[in-house]
Length: 206
Image: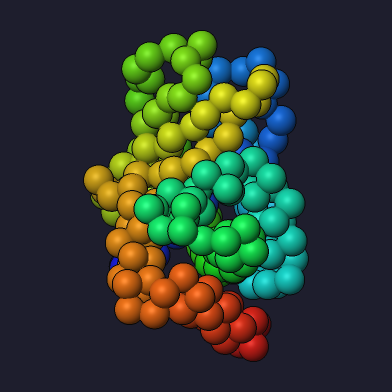
């Protein structure tokens, strides 16, 4: 249901997504990512529990540091696409809840893989005064550099991530394609059931 590109995104971009868990008051988005990504690298290196695969601790870390700083309603509605408006409020809530669990667990499973990567920012087009910006970066470590572009929106004095691009593929667009196929075959409730089943299976293995 989900492509290998998503797995690549998760293993390489978690660093910056986790970095978004730091307060971003009155700070340019590219400066924010540059500053906090360094802090997160140091935290991961120093945390023996995360490196040893303590899943409950990893999940708690991701849930606390990442998700409050993502516009999750926008991310979910964009991933569901045109079907979002057809969903009832209850279905929208279920979709958002299950999608969040899916991403939290996926991020958590990849977090232990973050070791010696470094992040280099590319010049940002536009201005920090714009309501939405794209921050382009490269994650460097072993192997070829990985291109990562982040879409952020301004919410008051803070910035929230609502989409990520890896190797030319936007995360939300990738999910939109697979979600549309599931909804086309089994309806909105079918997608909810599919996500719930996937999350239950992952929970049983942890």
